[in-house]
Amino acid sequence: MKSKIEIKQSGITNLNVDAVVNAANSQLREGSGVCGAIFSEAGSRELRKACKEIGGCKTGSAVITPGFNLKAKYIIHAVGPIWHGGDEGEEELLYGAYEKSLSLAKEYECNSIAFPVISSGIYGYPKSQAWEVAVRACNDFINDNPDYSINIFFAVLSDKSQEMGEKAIKKVTGE
Image (cartoon, rainbow, N blue to C red):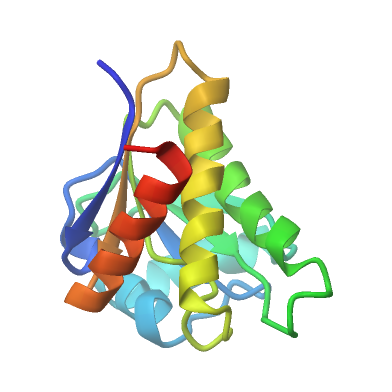
């Protein structure tokens, strides 16, 4: 089966995937938005305990926990950068968060993964730029791992986000 990148208009926890990606903070604390929804639906107590045992995660990287009460077997906690104007390595850090998430998915034999558009919410990364980095990182991973099949989904909640994502996919992949 050929790996692919798709956009689904759905809450991330509703997708039937092997791993969901949490747009995490570096302390791995329960937050709001996507992070809050994942903690709530996975089971806050268990997930807080698992994250506390890990201790934290550097910006531009990711760690993994069980999925607890989610449909997904795993939660990959990816820490994207806070936007400071683009001159503080934000693009490399954001790319790294996706790259590490996908490497963990492969290590744990996940054949499907769902991402939010990391850093594009309260962290302020411009949405269209965040989409391009996300799609480029995912497309590079697919190209660098031709013998590994994974379906990569982006969970979005609006038509506008879906349109931005589809535009980024066409720009990056030419499809």
